[in-house]
Length: 455
Image: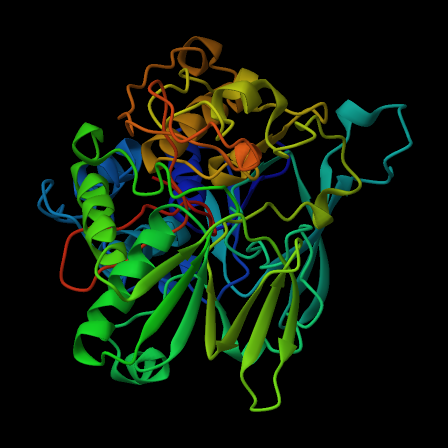
């Protein structure tokens, strides 16, 4: 390579891509907007993952680390986000930064990717020119040339809003101080004090919502004044608690069972077919949420939004993409990952051919390759980048040798079906969503890239 491989994101999948490049002797530069490796993981450090350590360490990264004297954690243990970051991601980033093939740069935000000297319209010579990455750094703007780009930036930076139209509802931004995105750390006394004894709205379905319901139910046992309105866009609770005993990710199934118990404990009131179009302040300072059909949830103190994530495509506006129009995922993957009819385990093995974009040398990997689809496994990302980097190295035999078996969730019901009153569950698929947390128990969610939600 004349120029280095640019990897966007120093999360699990981005660092795995760099590790594969290092093993092959390819020059690389990892560009992370946060101040350290796994910056997105640090935002949910309290979450315990569904996956055990054996599924959370890229095989090539393990080899490099062990050669440096690193001791692998217990393969059967379930780490928290903090443990995953401190015991694996941070040491891996440090190792990759020291290798002669590459660099790892923090506090470096990619704000644009293009072909050097060519905007989106220019065809002539396009495939022969390097990429030009436009960066924001502490020293000011910078332009960096790269032979290829692997975008592992994830989706964590772009949570879906409360508003039903895909945009923040009127009043949502104005009352952001009382609207949290993601799973609060209810084990933190300050966080618990914020929600205890309050009327809390939880918007969303999936593992994140399950974790929030369990946490709030525990608060309600300590402070019976705590009450929860659980907003669901679909007509019924249906399969909102996941696959239970049918879930091959045992701890995710356990979370669903705990959430089912929490929802039936008296503190939680499901409010179905509710799609928020307005957030308004009452005379007493509390909030009222209004649905598309005019129904209202009143006297709201706090709102927790766990409605999923979406990819940030803004910095890719000058490169040519082929994405599914609904999921904003790699088009070839869309039918397999759509939340209406898939599970984490029924995605066919895939690699560089499925992930390549019309812009030759550009690959979207990790959670970003799934767009708005809510489920992703870290080991899927590891296999993706193994294949992609092998292809970039010209080793098509290795790049095409893709073999991965994923666990089934046991249940599925996608966001696109919330208007169908006859849909409660599907026997042949499953879904999972953004990170969930239950203090003191091994349940949680694997996030990948610079951020994103996975199984």
